[in-house]
Image 1: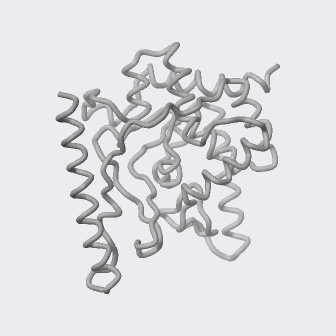
Image 2: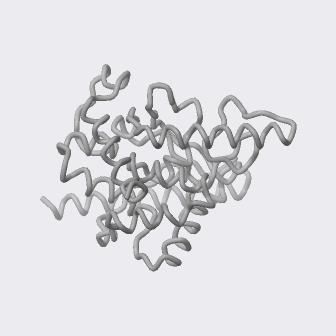
Image 3: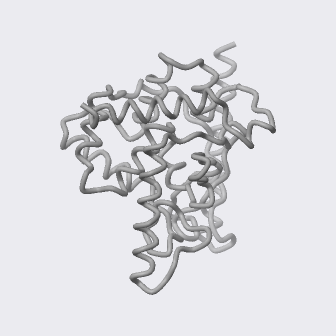
Length: 260
């Protein structure tokens, strides 16, 4: 029953709090390097519905980013692919195949004071979180330009991008990723300046809402990376035609303003 499920969820959270507290104390006393419970937080309950932007607001958002090309690419991936902020932060150049116009989602960035570098790259919670997605042509071109800027900056400082460089990095070698909390604050300041009322996570819901009108539910769930949809091993080596169409649709939706 629903009451039994709530009771079970509360018990899981209670156990997590107890274990996290004990491990946190062990970390403070130097018995362990950091609190491992920070890497395994239980899922939260249902909250209030998130505000979702409309297409005109999203186009206005990108129009305001002409002087911030790197941030624009970050937000475009959030919008067209429906990625979580932590997933975009975790993207590495090795996860992108720009010739094939695909991106592999296989991690997220978590932050906490108790972690060795104040952040860690965490594997997906389930098989649905690891996915291969199509990218639209305009997003691919913006990523190529972003890569060129990253390489140029590294060369100017006498270095080069690390083989495992993050796509969005705080250091010229690409070894240190952007933090999801920092990006969210930056985004919030931007939308408030525009007079909008939604969060960075709202872009992910925007994609789901828009695709829900033109794509099958299975395609949306695959792109979002959650739900109970079965994923075959063969799917991880290619993207479906439906996902290609979804990527093209979302790219065109954002770029409509530029063609008018």
